[in-house]
Amino acid sequence: MVPHHLDPWESDPTYTLYDSTVAQIGAPSGAITIQRLGPEQMGPLRDALYEAAYWRGDDGPVVADALATPHLRVYIEGWGRPGDVAVGACDSLGIVGGAAWFRLFTDADHGYGFVRDSVPEVGIGVQPGWRRRGVGRSLLVRLHTEARALGITQLSLSVDRDNPALRLYERLGYVCLSDAEGAATMILDLDAR
Image (cartoon, rainbow, N blue to C red; front, side, top):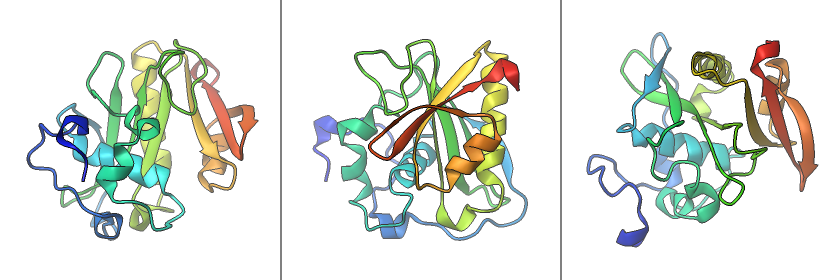
């Protein structure tokens, strides 16, 4: 259990903490739509961050414990600050099976895919039952549209080299800037797409 003073989501009494085996949902029902998520919709972001971090399907730690670690917490702690944008994939029942987001960081406090403080870093996570259905691509296309509307010209991300999503990022125009410890830091020039 996360100590009360470390849980940045304690203000969301409707969100249930659960272990990773219970967190997974089944396949989507009906049509999937992509919609903007508000700062009050922390549940889908938390789920997506967990799926992004533990994409291999290994037995990960309990969700609350995983997201309390500083290297993951930085991606959504204090969500809703200027520059935070998130979109979610919802099925016809209103279930959110994936989310993508971007956030600005500083050189002193940042995520794995940090390039510079003027380039937001992207995060994306999709539930296993929703993968290989075009959900990730749809989330990113919408996220890129949101970024362009805000005048953002570049986005970055970090991806493990053995993650199948790497091919998706390359197809969408992300290019590798650097490699470290089996992960690639990639950048997308939105003006070129």
